[in-house]
Every structure is written in C-alpha cells, then in structure tokens.
Length: 442
Image 1 (cartoon, one colour):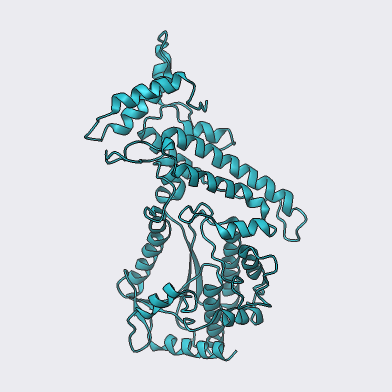
Image 2: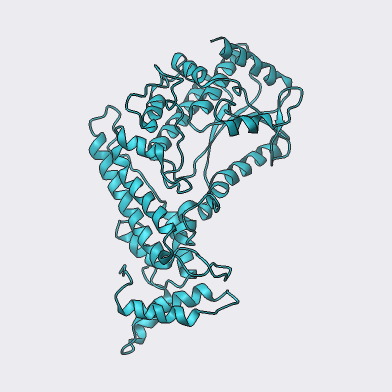
C-alpha cells in the first residue's frame, strides 16, 4: 500500500529529527494496532541498518474491568511483542498501566458506595485510565526530559474526532503539545487514513508473530451483525467500527459491543451483562442509595451498605458463573487452557472494601465473610474487636446485628455537620430490621 509506505517514510523522518524516545499507545483496537505495526516495521528496517538508536515504549491501559476477551487478547499481544523484541534485539518494551487499588472500580463503588457512573458523574475515567497513564508518562519525561507520543487517532473516526484533530495547533513538524504533560509532544501518523485503508493494511500485512484475524473476529462479533466480515467489507456502515469499553460501563444506556458478542458466539459472558444491568438499575433506584451525600447535602448519596454487600456477593457469584460458562463452552477450542481463571476482583480490592466498610460502621468484617463463601481470603478474621467485645457481654435482649445497623448510620454521619434526620433514619432502620428487610450475610 502506497499510503503505508509513505507513512513509514514519514515516521523515519520524525525518528531522526530529535532524540526523544517514542511512546506508542496501544489499546488492541484497529487504529492503535496499525500505528504499532507501522512503527515495528519501521524499526525493523532501521535495525538492519544499525540505525535504531531510540527506545520505544508500548503503553497499554488496563482499567481491570475490561471485557475478558479484550483483556486476554491485549495481554497476549503485549507478551508477543515482548518476546519478539527480546529475540530480535529491538529497543521496545511493553508497559501495562493499571489504576492504584484504592482507585479501582470495585474499591470505589463497593467500598465507598460510589453510584455506577453516569455521563454527568463519570468518576471512573480519570481515576482508572488517565491518572495511571499520566503518572507513567511524567516519569518518562523526568527520565528523558521530553517524549514523543504516537496516537492512533483518525479524522475519519467521527465528526467529534475530526474536530478535535483540526483544533490542535501543530508545529513545523506536525507535532502538537500534550494537553496536560509538559515536554510531551503528540504525533498522529494515520490521522488521514480511511477506515477501509486501515483494515486493508491489517488484512494484507500480518505481524511477524501472526496475522490480525482474531482481532478482526472480535470486531465482527462486537458489531452484532451476523454477516459482518471486515476482510470483505472494510467500509461497511457497521463493520469495523465497534468500540470496546469496560464491561461494567453504565455511562451508556446499553452496551452494544457486549450484546453483539453475546449474539455471536461469546454467550459465556452473559453473567457480566446481567451484573452490569443490575448496577445500572440500582444506580437509578433511590431505595438503594443513602438520602444524603457524604458532604451532608440532602440528595441521592452513595450506595447503602446493604446494597454494597449485595453487589459484592453478586459479583463473586458472577465470577464463578462466568468461569463455569467459559470452561464449558471453550473446552473443545484448539487454544483451550483448562487452568485459565477469569478474575473479576482482586483480593487486595476486597481488603480495601472491608477497610472502607469498617469506616462506615461494619463491625462483622462482612466483606471477608462474603469472600470466604467463595474460598477467598480464608485467613482473614470475620469479626472486629468491637463485635467480639459485644459478644462477650452476652447481654439479654441485646441484638448485635441491630446494633450494627444503627452503628452504620452513626459511623457514616459522624463527620457530617448537619445531622438533621439521623433519628428518623435510625427509627426506619430499626423498623426495617424487625420487618426482616435487611439481608443477613452471616
């Protein structure tokens, strides 16, 4: 392809124009894959001439709640790149960036009760994707004084993307300044490529370690079109334009890529879809949320403790079910790995969830109790010192579970200056408790 050759030659000019190391952002999608492929082709050519002097960082963001098939594919590709670079002595290293455990989706939603994200309260993107990337990129700038980032963005993607690209001020080399990282510059090598040109290039040019057929199949499945074949129809309206996001994303009303997957051979992931639908529904159900925000302001606040307990247990049930489905459906596949385990939540996240619950009045280490039903964190205590002390008292007619429900209100409201309505909340909780409307987890 002439456009590919022109792009590689243009990349070489940029490569020799300064001594900045390159950072290639890689999501596993078609555009970032195309940029990465072009860069690897270029660096192979330079390597044979002994002119590959710069280090190239391949950076991939993992929110830890990516769709399992996408996460598995991306991890496989990163491992292949690392292996290939080591074997061929190329100056390429791969870096997978994850959010800090205290900023993870589960720590914030289940631990602190953040409601599932909305378009107006999109608390997830910055914490889970932008912050880890920014921290890593700033560390590279500190190390090298300056960096050049290569992005797989194209004007042909959408009107908003085209406007964004048009709005950037470019220097004489076609570079723009990064929005938030000083001394970081941005290059978009394929910004003028069409959708068809991207797919044609990927179809006709395999990586040194294998072709792009599996990625194409993911796009086919995610489109939801049974007859979508990117190799044959690269410019079709729906083919090849699938966007894969976090499987828990509730910013959109419906997850079309997940729904497409379920219709096209990946129905083993259906428990994920059901869980996502549940947190979407609960977010809009005021009965599942506190009547006050943590600031003390009256309004839809965080998920109630009882809601969080329910959602944690349901998440672990979902993890069990999705693994059962996966192994049941994939057992006859050529690449089936019987020891593969799909983990939806880390032990460290459950530990932080428990820490947050303790602050909100949980005296029974309920997160640990729930986890131990699923053979997780078996070495953790299922009682706090306060609960043990209360059990030792053995007072007649003293109900520890009811005490805990009331204690949760006190713990949650202790730092709120306006405690108006606390007594009403306590009264309602006592009434609900004796009506049996609290779900026990013991």
